[in-house]
Image 1 (cartoon, rainbow, N blue to C red):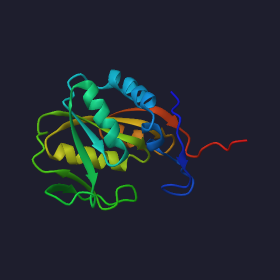
Image 2 (cartoon, rainbow, N blue to C red):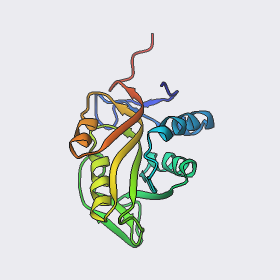
Image 3 (cartoon, rainbow, N blue to C red):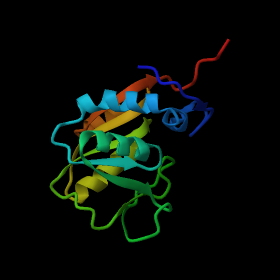
Image 4 (cartoon, helix red, strand yellow):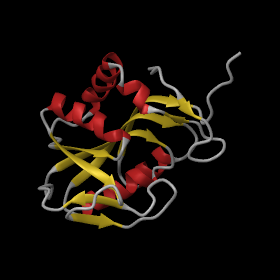
Length: 177
C-alpha cells in the first residue's frame, strides 16, 4: 500500500531518506487507511497500544481508539521530565534511552507497540524490552513504514516479535525525472 509522503534526505544518516509521518498524519484519509490496514493484524486480546515518541504516538492513539484499547506513550529520554521509569539504551535513534511514566498499569497485559518507521529496530526493541521488564506481554510491533534492507524486522523477529508495516519503502527516495 502506498502512502503519499515526503522524505527527509540523508536522515538519520547519509544513504537513508526517512519517511515523514507528519505529511501522512495531516491527511485524515491516509491515517484512516493506516488504521484500517493495521486493525486486522492487531491481536484481539491487545489491551494497550504503546506509541513510540514521536511519530508513533499519533498513530497509536488512533489505533487504540479504533481497537477499544488503552494508550501509553513511550517517550525518548529528555522529552519527559516528570516521574518516569527509564531504560537507558543509547544509540543514534533514541539518544539517551526511553522513558515511560511510572504507575502505568501494564503488568500482565498484552501490549503492542506502534511507531512511524522501522529502520534498524533498535528503538522498537528497546521499547519492547522496557515494557517486558515492567511485566507487559509485548510481542507485536506495528509500523506505518519499514525501510527495506536495514534489518529491523529481522532483529525484532529474533526477539520473538511479530512485525507488520503498512508500506515498505527503499532506503532512498527514487530520483524524480
